[in-house]
Image (cartoon, rainbow, N blue to C red; front, top):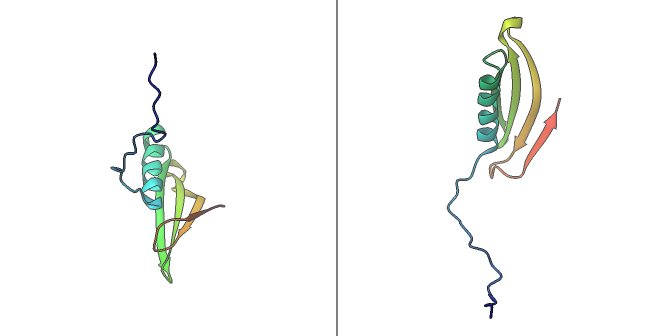
Length: 88
């Protein structure tokens, strides 16, 4: 005879780190540089205005006189989330 479990809840693990939107973008910028062997680089620029953080993700081509392309912009408040993502 099989035993039927009455527990409907899975094991919940609350031991995790909260990642910031800028931290996620920084990780992606580093990956871009690694995956392209430095042919393309990812870079972030940020500024704050009235407790709102604006961050732009740039793709830079060093061999093309450091040509810069703004890929996306994120906007978040003091609580980090929600974050709004805008493309250029």
